[in-house]
Image (cartoon, rainbow, N blue to C red):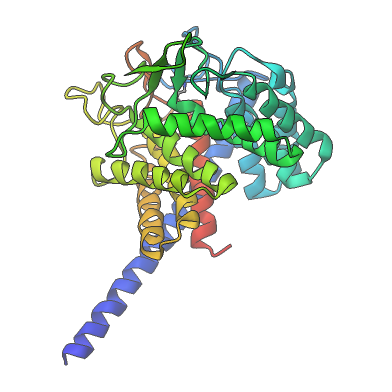
Amino acid sequence: MIGAFGSMDVFGREENKLNEHKNLLHKCHQTFQFAEQQLRHLIEKHPDYFPMYTVNGKWKHGGEAWTNWCEGFFGGQLWLVYEQNGDDGWREKAEHYSRLLEHRKTDRNVHDLGFLFWSTWKRWYDLTGDPAVNHVVIEAGRTLALRFKEKGQYLRSFVSDESLFIDIMMNVGIIFYAAQATGDPDLLYTATQHSLTTRRYLVRGDGSTAHEGIFDTETGVFLRQSTHQGWRDDSSWARGLAWALYGFGTVYGFTHDLRFLQTAEACANYYMEQTPARGIPPNDWSDPLPAIPYESSAAAIAASGLFQLANRTGDLVRARLYRDYALRIVDTLTEPEFLAINTPGWEGILKHGIYHERKGLGVDESVMWGDYFFLEAVSKTIKELSGE
Ligand code: GLY
């Protein structure tokens, strides 16, 4: 009898899981339909405009940018929609918005060429295999590598020579890619050294991350941890940690160096241990008085990074843990509390993101990278659950 009850229990649980997955798959398809509606509206209302964050749910406003790092995320969403619906009209738009960025392949003012070109031209290349498109991605990687500081062994942030940002871990992949595509050992050296320096100085023993490292530019000696968008220098800004989780996982994919996998997994463990049950962190886990309880873009990035990690870890139990946690995040973010589907007049897709809490920029708003990584995570969920 115990056996019989046991099996019924197992079957019951399996059936519940199947129903949960069916429901989530439905919400994911609904999310892409909603995304098409929102993106079409933005193209028609503000042609050739690259938004960053909303103000009261509207994309166009005169708010400060701080730095220009978001221009790839709109085109990136158009590529993601095209991958779902196969409609040539969307592909035409995706190419158009990607072409508008081409001149940025030589932009030496930002550390974000991975964000700009991985989401757009790299997606384009993956679909077409066109060498001319690949050439643009490689050139962007070469340009980013020019930020390398020999003294200190890191790619400097847009702020100053002395500054290393955790965010750059999400961009350094494009240098590894350029190194692989060209066989250039200097590019490989630069990207590897930057990743090791970041691992050493910005990732702590408990898997938490600092936003910024400050170096002595004369000697290259590391001086201290610092932050711009987190609560304190010694706390962990959730989006920065999500960039590290995803970025170190990407670097492991290029290098097969276990140190990078371990770092990505330490960040993933910190995220899962510290975050409330539904999977959405605050802007900074240590902040005793957060402006709002959620930073949804960090959750979207973490979900996509966890799907990647699930495919890269050699441990089957961990793989399942990462995948299930990613599904939990997507399940939460596809509810109307976060998905703007029932919020009339709201122009973004994902609500409750934060750009720069201290500066008061984009607080409790939609943010372009949040929408992009959310759609990426939703697309990965569809693949997982429909067995593609
Ligand atoms: N500057 C990159 C970020 O806000 O995450």
